[in-house]
Each structure stands twice: as structure tokens, then as C-alpha cells.
Length: 197
Image (cartoon, rainbow, N blue to C red; front, side):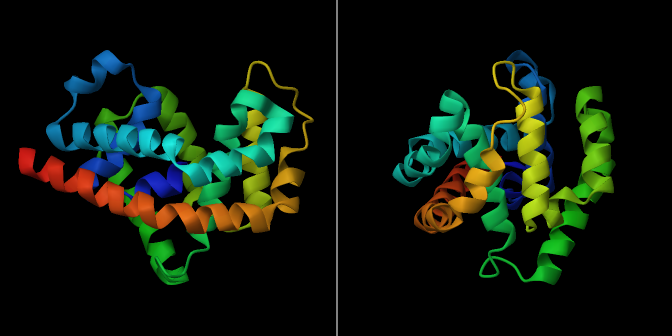
């Protein structure tokens, strides 16, 4: 799952912060944050573990694996944010916009916990309103190019965006088979976290 899905599957403001921090901190540093932010880090990991084991995600990876092999999961993550953003059974367009603005607000309010490498990325995210605009094909293309540019062992001209466009029906079905299961799992993880608080 990518940024929008992780933010949507946060049940408190602290979890929003922790979910975004997970990819930007060292494991040993996780306990230096307040408990509610640690909960977000835990939720992020639980989501990633569940996602990686789900049969529908294994099917989705087949779209990208011939092109990028072990990096297929990264492109599935980006793809899933497109389907989350366009899932009006989760939120209306106005609710997705409000969600995006709330996430940016929460991150600003918790800026003291954000590492510098995250702040640089967050500035671009907010300026381009990535969370809301993942609903657009061209923004998914931009995100996929970013993954290619950051990947050490991939050439930047691999046609992963074209694979996304050409296999959107397959990826949509994978999303449909997967996301309600993930939402149920995340709610269960959150219930356990709340028992600890």
C-alpha cells in the first residue's frame, strides 16, 4: 500500500503520523516517539505484512513482474492508491479532499517528529496534493517514474506506467478482491492497539 491507503487506514491522528514515518526512520528509533505515533508505525507494518501475503496482491504483481521482477510490489502499491482514490464507496470526492487536507494538517501539527528527508518529500506532496490527485492516471504515472528513478537496479525507461494502463481491469479486480479484507484486518489491529492504551 502507498501513502493514501496508509493514511486512510489510520484511526487516530497519531497513527497518521506514524504511518508516514515508518519508511523514513530506523527500526531502533521507533520507540523514541509517543505511543500514539508508535501505534501508527505498528499499523503500517501490519498493513504491509498482510498486503504482501494476500493472494490478490500476488496476482497484481504478475502485471509488473515481467518488467521489474522483485520491484513489482512497489508498483502494485502505487497502483492500489489509484483504486483507493477512486473508490467512492469509501469516501465521496469531497470527503477524499477533506481527508487529504486533514492529513496535511496533522503532519504540520506534528512537524517536530518528522525527519528532514520526510519533510522534503512532504513539501512536494502537499504542493501537488498527491493524496487527492492519486485518482488521476497521469499522477500515477508520475509516482511510477519516481519509483523507477529511485530504484538502484532499474532503468528509467521501463514501461511500467503503460503496463498499469493496459492492465487496469485486472488491477481493479485485484483491488476489489483485496481491499475490504485489508480494511477488516486494519480494524482488528486497531482494536488491539486501543486495548494497549
